[in-house]
Length: 189
Image 1 (tube, rainbow, N blue to C red):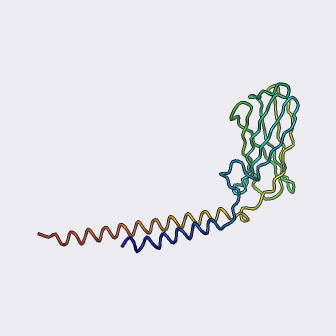
Image 2 (cartoon, rainbow, N blue to C red):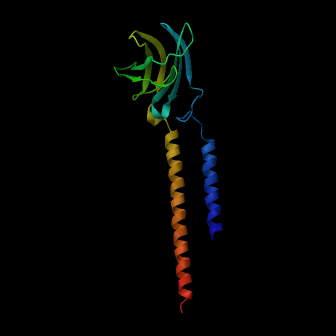
């Protein structure tokens, strides 16, 4: 009996795998460094600043990794305050995120850009004494979530797999119950 159901389920899983492989691939939130990652180096006062920015289209946000070094010695600056400022070109929307230190002279921030459109970013490096140095960032074109179909494909795929698994479990439980009922009826004393 299991062989009769395993074959169609196997075909269904192969079909889903084939469909998933045929769909175009996009950079996703799990990618650490991909083709959309942007890098820049800049001088900000007494500091050398290296910036990596990774757009996460499905989350409408951008991850920033900022390395700050003393320009004279090249040593990491562990006590700087790094802030990423954002502004949308077509409106008055603006925001910021304070970067958290993740290592000596390395800072990490995720900036949410809620509305579709072109966003500008500026990084602000503040030294412990309070002096601040701006660094021009990047422009990002944030798309509307409805133009981002990969999340829907993943949801549908997971829902189909869960429904198939639940159906299999129900079938298996009922089959076992029938077998027990048939077995207990034949062993009467």
